[in-house]
Image 1 (cartoon, rainbow, N blue to C red):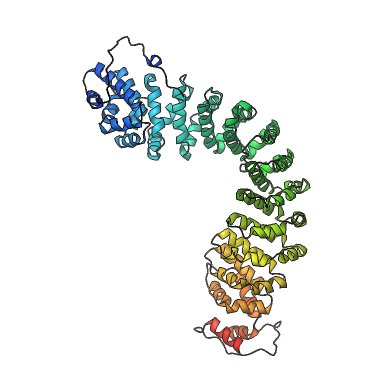
Image 2: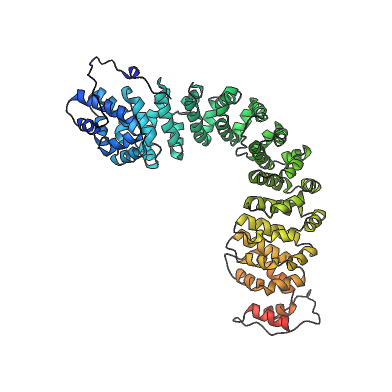
Length: 584
């Protein structure tokens, strides 16, 4: 915003003074004059300091070094209002420098600045000081603690655009903290913020939207925003091509509206969702945000046929739009009707095609969408299979992006529950592809990979392949994970793999049985699958089972290889005894 002319700053006071010249070599002299007992000298000295400071940061730092800050902080409380005004002008200009802000913080100037905010003559530069200081975390806390917000909110209605801008910038910095957001709402800050959306100054509009983006994350504030026709005002911005630079920020605020089910219902009844979807269809829009769409909202969005809109967005050659549309698809699939509707619209085919794109963000979003679409949906799983998605998903397992790997493994797991698809997945080398993810340090990657392996291992061919490529050692290693979720799924996978003797014997060679026994003795690590896994491993070698338990079940059939090695003593290693029995 442009600086005001000198005439605009003049007050009704009739006294006039001869200009006090300030040469580049004389700033130290002017700083000394800030301690003068003569008011007319103080007025001109402050004005000279301001003029010198306006010329650049180097001058501001020079004034700081000359000690100008301390006397200026005292002069903002001077009895003469013209002295106060000019001192604030100088201080406001200097405060835009980082070194000066740091020094002001040490001088504890904020309480004095806030105290004088009620004086109209100093509004512009007092708020400029606060706007600069509010960039600092500790200063934000001081402004809040010294009750700066009530006056700042009142100043949002000032007739001076500079005062509006400075006050708004300060509030925008403060509402990054939760308690300030609540206070802004409690003090009636939303109506003036909405009014500022009509400002003729773009910087004020941007700051108002940025502030609303934080404030409307609170449920009560969201309701007030809705009651004050905030949604309608935002749609007015979105439908105005002249405000295209505000669209991205307006969408962020709208995303907060869609996170509240009551807001979505009311927006739906007023026809707002239809307008929003029409806007979303505009190809020129670079950003679409799905927001936090809850189950209550999904039903309303489905009734608005939002699925059609999102599928159309997936065909736009804009990576940002396609990525956001994929994220919206993933969010909406928690509603069963939406999941079926996406299949009918050919969404799955489009998502599968997106797996071949170069953008990691796009593939991450596409794999998340496929994972959610195939969850508990046989029809969608077969749709992915028929589109050749299983082969492309296996290729994603070799990617370096953990989320892509985790999402792909989850999708393959959903699909592998069906025998025909499972055979296809195995034929494309899924077991080999799962080896590297089994070494990951990312919990979700390990969980999804182990779960996928557990489903695939129900097939004898998969277990044989797992032994051949050396994957059993990696699986057994997961039994030592400190993550309860990883351990739980690893035990499940071991239990499945132990369904035939050769695979079970291999796992025992890697110490699986000994590790599982330790797990089952722990109150915190024991789980239902760890006990099942132990039983499955013992059933694979009845000689070892008999040595360990001193009994066999009626279903245990002894063959010619059975050998009684004697009861295991408590000190003897499970692994050593097992190896001895194998040699025998």
